[in-house]
Length: 133
Image (cartoon, rainbow, N blue to C red):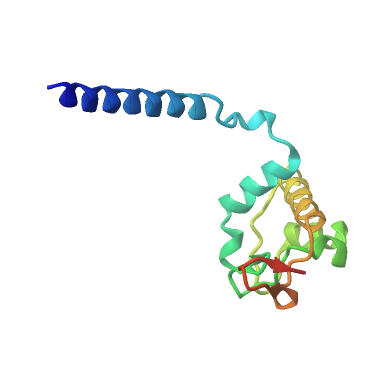
């Protein structure tokens, strides 16, 4: 009988620990208030809203209809990006973005550009699975 009590006690402790740790982890989730987001974060939300990743790549991942935009900010500059976003092209439709949305998307692309070089063809894969640029 003592063995059954020990099993139930251990199970109870494990369940209580799991629930306590889960509450600890999920009590401090990122804020869902969009007013507190910075321009680059809002730009990422716009990127997702218009499903830009269906045609464009970021870090070599995404669609193949448009170019990889990870380093487009340093290669083309903000004026070039804003012109494309405002008017579209023959292939890219004009989404009729507001000035604020254009600035936020441009800021998102600036943040992407500052994070590194994206071309996966330049990566060297090590034996342990890590990559070097």
